[in-house]
Length: 573
Ligand SMILES: Cc1cc2nc3c(=O)[nH]c(=O)nc-3n(C[C@H](O)[C@H](O)[C@H](O)COP(=O)(O)OP(=O)(O)OC[C@H]3O[C@@H](n4cnc5c(N)ncnc54)[C@H](O)[C@@H]3O)c2cc1C
Ligand code: SF4
Image (tube, rainbow, N blue to C red; front, side):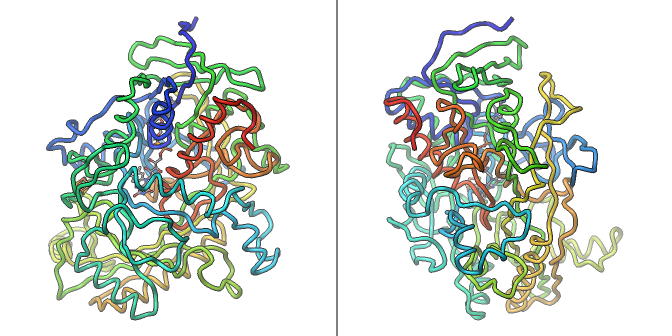
């Protein structure tokens, strides 16, 4: 029998970027909030002298414990899904700050095209351009409507960016709050080569601060030291925007936020129309609690936002055979395998210095910035070079013809440790009728809740796009004059084993039509007006960028909607 707790106005499930932003905005407005986080608490002191590659990169110190909870996966419905027992394709955040504590900080806004992808594609190419089974849809909001929320998020995080307006992206109402990161010789080489080919490179907008910055909430943070231990690590300087050093302390200072760590939510309580609270387990003691609340906010990342709704039987589950229902629909990912690797025998770069978001990119082949009339795919991706920092264990790129062991292998490893550059691509990913999330019929987590099952594969659209982007990446690398180069522009079946990207999206998508979306543009559920589901689960497709800038903007919009809802009740649209 669960312990009954007194009712609270708002309960948030998950305290990453989505949960943290909402907690800050509600508590500043005087609303009492309880934040339930399944992992432990964190602060920057935890990361002091902790550049331990084995512990953080390989043993995933900051990630979800897969022995307690994981995801099952299959490429298609004919296969039996199996649990991901060790980390591969993506790594799921856990603990205060979520993945926002160990992300890289590459920070973009999705393109105006993204938000109106279906109508803009039909307008330019006709309805036949969208293949059968591809379930792209407009997001129910335009870039211009979302722009003020991007602005708010970027000011909070102190995003460092290029003052020269990139002509390929949406218009900004304000310049970036801080100047761009330093331009390394590698970035200069890439930009020079890209410009020579007629493209428009710019410094990647960064949540690693280029200079000391005080945000509108009065939070002051130090500049990045280019220590190169962002990705999978916390930042001991607080230079990387992380919910733990930005929004969470702001919420705590109000006295209106109570955070309960080690609190794993297993169910949403509801009567079919409205939620009345959540059930959670204290993972240290095993005790179960019932936390009643007027408003329930799910901010537990894509997989658990979907899993909690399905397990709690809230919202209409997606049925892939009819294409009806919404919870679990439009899962998408990212296509990152197309790249060009260059070996420079006559040059050495300082690749062990870097920062999570240090790099340059161009968008000439992203979104609909180029003519797709004669191409067998829509959208595209960013082409970029990053200097996130080589690692002693993980980094060992050598030419393909190098022996796999012995003297020649060692010589090549030493020779190319600081002389290998990769021009990479970040391809968008479209949703399909047969790509979805549902509850696994066989496997359960440590608390008896079914695991989420992922049914997903790369499609011809992805293969064609990767071929195209890989060729373009190769052209840029060639213009950088490497001694040897290798281009990979093939995409095979999706394999959950090698790491690719933790940019999972969809499952509780937003839109203007309840038949094809689970939430409205305030992240409010159509089927339960006091439930808000926030995060990349609301993306109807994934763009050719990292997602968190757009997650942040949508979280600010959701917070505005929740405050409106608390005041007036009812549907927000
Ligand atoms: C290594 C890495 C690098 C990345 N780099 C970038 C980048 O450069 N740029 C970019 O845009 N994005 C990047 N990302 C993605 C980015 O981190 C995420 O988009 C973002 O953090 C998502 O925020 P969120 O709040 O939606 O989810 P999360 O950060 O995952 O937070 C969800 C929280 O909910 C908690 N939770 C889950 N289930 C429950 C439950 N049942 N009960 C209670 N709590 C629960 C989790 O423990 C977690 O703390 C990266 C991700 C990783 C892993
Ligand atoms: S590279 Fe910069 S932002 Fe990243 S962890 Fe190091 S100091 Fe922090």
